[in-house]
Length: 331
Image (cartoon, rainbow, N blue to C red):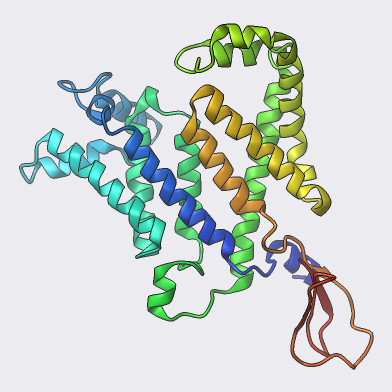
């Protein structure tokens, strides 16, 4: 692999993005179980306690693939030990709560990530018609956390194990895959919006803000802003379609991130979709927040006067690598 390709696909990274992703996902899981605390049995209960019966979601999952986990696996296993369905659901709730806390503090990072992904995916699939984009995106984030080089720099595991740092190239590769995945999500989501007329004339935004259970704002307030709805719809379409291109340009990266996070914050506030807004902000900041360098550019050293140890020029934000180094990293 050429040096330029290696630096594009395997950029050196400190791993702070992974710490932010772990902490954010831990908070996301905790919010998920807290928000569903009162309705947990209604959403995931069976024929006697469930609102739509869990076995409907389980059956839909089995049709997709018999290997996708669902809560029926866990409840069936616990029933063999004499545990009732309500007790099993309570055990699953407390398990997710404990796993979210462990993930937040970075204890047993890898086993916790695997177990949390399993239970969260099982809940999302058994939830059936109650599941939506936030569940899918949380599953995506937990998958990236599970396969990433753990423990991360800010985890308690790192402190207890006295490990120095993971392979920076491997950390950079995992972040690069997350970045590309996020770009694909926004591009095709924005492209789909552009193909319909509802986002160009503001109809879809009107429906999103006035149809229960997302009608958080009074309908007369939304109607008073009706003139701005087409402009808002066009802005959202353009933002999502151009996001994969503008976010890589360093002078605009902070502006694009601020704009996209503000959009998701507005969705969380005006539509009550707190979990969806939170997971999108977490994924965006973990992928592109410019605390670490995004690209590595190469430049041949011209003098032998540079020392053999790396030196950091804070004013120019450039790292030089030794007398025999052949690259400069812009961060």
